[in-house]
Image (cartoon, rainbow, N blue to C red; front, side, top):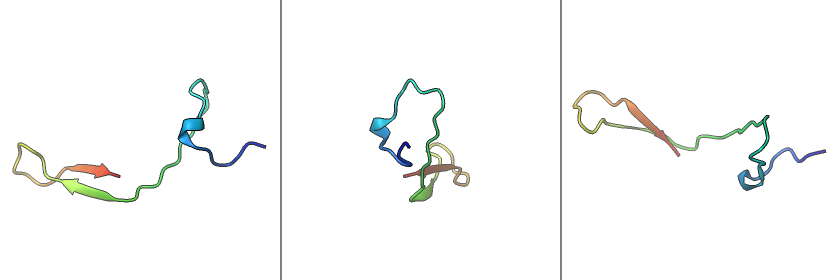
Length: 45
């Protein structure tokens, strides 16, 4: 039986069936650079 979790570096790039599960640790909003409107961009770490 294959291990339930494996490192990203161990993933076979030739695989047709691939699922990646991630967990968002931090999410924040940034104001647009050239606009004085409300914040619309978000970044995740």
